[in-house]
Amino acid sequence: MNDQHIASAFDRDLEAIQAQIMKMGGLVENAILEAAISLETRDEERAEAVRRADKAIDTLEEIINEEAARVIALRAPTAIDLRLVLSVIKVSANLERIGDYAKNLAKRTSVLSQMAPVNDSAGALRRMAKEVERMLKDALDAYVSRDAELAQDVIDRDIEVDQMYNALFREFLTFMMEDPRNITACMHLHFIAKNIERMGDHVTSIAEQVVYLVTGTIPDEARNKGDKTSVTA
Amino acid sequence: MNDMRIVERDVDTNEVKIAAKDVQVFYGDTHAIKDVSVDIEDKTVTAFIGPSGCGKSTFLRCINRMNDTIDVCRVSGDIRIDSEDIYDAKVDPVQLRAKVGMVFQKPNPFPKSIYDNVAYGPRIHGLAKNKADLDDIVERSLRRGAIWDEVKDRLHAPGTGLSGGQQQRLCIARAVATEPEVLLMDEPCSALDPIATAQVEELIDELRKNYSVVIVTHSMQQAARVSQKTAFFHLGNLVEYGETGTIFTNPNDPRTESYITGRIG
Image (cartoon, each protein chain N blue to C red):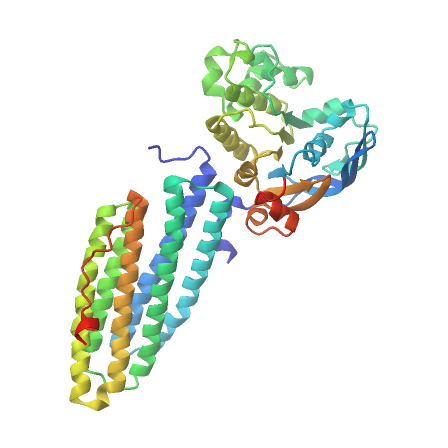
């Protein structure tokens, strides 16, 4: 298939809208890392910067949605072009949610830095966040290069994030049973872990959009669920 | 906010090229255009849309005084191109039409060679000093019409022997040969297949770097694709005029919304 439309302005519109997605993706990746680092280093200023930066992410989502509506209204996209525009709308929504979770993480950092640290949990959360950030990077790379295989790989990796969450869930439960004074901190830490796990789900959803974009079908829901806490707890 | 927007659809200039004020057109007793005032910008594609008989073609034809040729037609009001009143008694309609080119619905090449079709305007307006000069103009125009590569080896074959889409691009090349400042297009793609249409649309986008293009079209999708400004006409009134993206995503007037969503016609 020829890559270019006869109407070159159409190509420019589609490229511009994808460039916005990439810009948004970059901001979100950064938010995840910065939020996790601020948690580990108990750096309230850094956390505050993450909270402020979320505005730009929200604004980008609005712009992307507006532009997508515009492309649909003006260019009546079909087939791969239509899938692209639809996927852009969904991916931007996923990115926006991930951004919100990062912001929430930063908020809890501000509270947690007032309390005594609980073991090495902040480090474990940072590693978990790092893994999600890597998945997001790969999902976005797969998006740009239309690489369904890489996207599938991202989908398969979500189980690792789920397992990390499981481990942390048990760990926090143990700490809380050991000493009730840990409960407040552990509740916050548990929410953070859960939020990072949710980020992973949104990344998976982005990867699914890539598969949809390339192949025209959403991959099977029958992926391995690593989060067993809802059955064992 | 604005710097993050897709700049592609932005209008390059806000300079007014054609200023129409209180224009009325009568065909005998029929009031075809009612009080239309509109400022059309330079280096911009402006689309006129609206149901059949709404006056969009009539208004377009006022811009190069094509309605002069219709006996029962009366035009009043004020139309200025670069602040010059084109209905002034001193204005020669032939000179005006050299400045305001027009492309019609059906490709209408002269029954002459491809070369002569394009050379006709420059010859009668004395735009070429010599043969070499004229050759240059013909090549440049055919290139601008995005048809040079297809016809360069048969410039002396008859223009009528080309395919419909090629003929239309030849007519566009002919229209730009006199270096007009405004290009009027009345349904330029309605006789063309989708690929030829896409080529002409791409050409229109290209032409807007140099000209103010005004296009009348029945295809709302075409208006959406090619224009930066859209004017919606209904029953002789200019109902709404604005940025194309706004017209097609969030029009102001309920009549515009009804028309573009296919509820009135």
